[in-house]
Structure formats: C-alpha cells, structure tokens
Image (cartoon, rainbow, N blue to C red; front, side):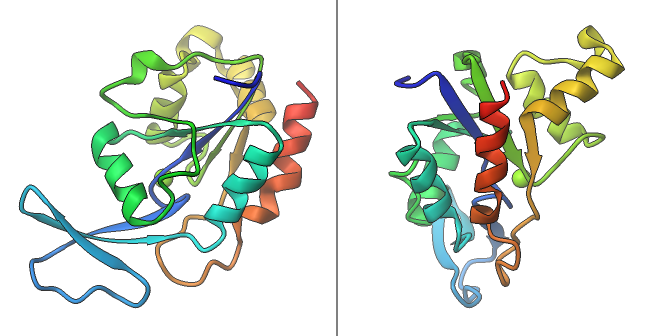
Length: 174
Ligand SMILES: [Mg+2]
C-alpha cells in the first residue's frame, strides 16, 4: 500500500452491475456478456465508476475493492467492465485475511447499516457490532461509511462522483 488513506469500494451494484444470464441470452443495452465455468454473466460498469476511482487515485488514496464474492471472479468481472486497472487491491471472501486497516479509511457501499451483507463487509475489516457495542458501531459507521445508490445497469442517476466531496471530508476528519 502506498498511502495512509484507503477507500474501500464495494463491487457489485456499486461500481458495476452484474447479472446471471442464460447461454445465448442477448445482453441488455450497454452490458457485455462473458462465460465462466459454464455460467454466463452480463456486466455493465457504472458510468461514473472510472472517473470516481481515478479522482481518488489522484488524491493519493489506495483503492481496495471489498466484496463478499470470490476474488478471482470479481477481478474477472471488473476486467470485463474495463475497471480492472483502476484499483490497487481486491479483497474477497477467500482472501479476507489480507486486509489491513490504514490510519484513514472510508467504505463506499450500496448497502448500509442494518443489512447483514454490510455487517459482513465490516467484519472483513475486523469490525464487529458485538465487540464494539451498538453506540460505538453506529459512530464508526457514521465516521467511515458512505452509502451510494445501487446501480443495476439503468441510468446512473446518482453518480459516484457526487460522493467525492463526502469521501474527502470523511478522510480529512479522521
Ligand atoms: Mg453491493
């Protein structure tokens, strides 16, 4: 890691839309189709994702994709969405021991508190509600986490770039 600031970014529905598809099924507008181990996928990068990640890299943040999925599969998905070069690292369910929390960090995810998958994400960073207690956990989420609108492949009506100021402000406040 090159920086003391890390922006963890969720993968599916945050920077890319991913759908399971049937063989021969036509990909919807803007989606690309690919096959892996007999399963077809349609993927479409969020239009604002590349700009969002590039600005953060210019701000000297390390960018780590944090996903509940398998790291190799998620790399593949991001490559197909042409986002493969825009992050420093990717942590998935299979390599979650590789996470080191830096001094300053933010997590951008389409999920938020109360969701099991979101709590699972935080547990990948070594943070658990049980250990912290409700109040501290809530304060930590407030300090470090930013919820984005889920991107399912349609219009990117609330682009990630609109969150840049908030990411910078949260990092600066830590
Ligand atoms: Mg997600």
